[in-house]
Length: 339
Image (cartoon, rainbow, N blue to C red; front, side, top):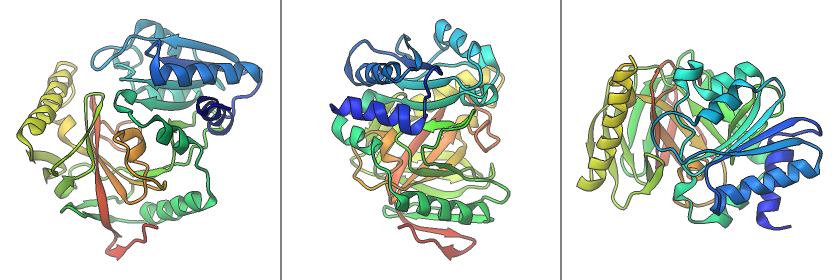
């Protein structure tokens, strides 16, 4: 089998467990290149194994509303349908049509889904495809143990190798553990799987985040040559320091979302709020793609923007994730083993 065929088997058979006669929808945004090749392989594998499969292509979207035909597709989906999103850029905004995030909407419909969004920055296709096939008992067990510790904690402290030091409240919040087990109606998440995400209490995150791996700007993963610092106060980014050109790009991206939020009746500062802290579990090295790099062991993800419908309460248009090398993690003052 070729790599695309192996990856397609993994997505269809392992992550989603698409059964014969089930409806399986694939949404992509290019007619060539990696997203389309993988989408086409998933379509062929699922059809060959009896699924009722369909590929739909949308325009490439960085900002703005979702494609009309994709909105109509979502509205017509029903319990036990399966969906695979494989996009260079983004899905587009669905709030005006469905009144909530697409994940919340799909879960309410009982749709199983797997997502790969923001592949425009992908350069190392082989490493990405290989990550799809990782499946070890050790990864799963380590993830479940760490989830149990986080779910029972009240305070979380994280330090990074380049100077990150943050502390926040996690009391009453539950951790999202993505092990790629999207077998029941309403289950879904990003692939490759293998990471945990905690949603800190809004307004509680204090300290500074020093990004030394990569930053997400629009649909691009931007590797950092020199660390970029986010200064935090009461859960919000109040200052960004580092390379002048890169800082300007980050502010332009966030300010654009501030305007979008204000026009739509959301808090314009919502995009500056820290909404997620995540921890990777997979072996490997960063490849310059946020979607995979955030799942790697000893990597921490800090995100700002929307957490509504996920596990937090920050309602926002827009979500950005940034990565740094971990040093230590403490829950209620106790050091947590990362490996």
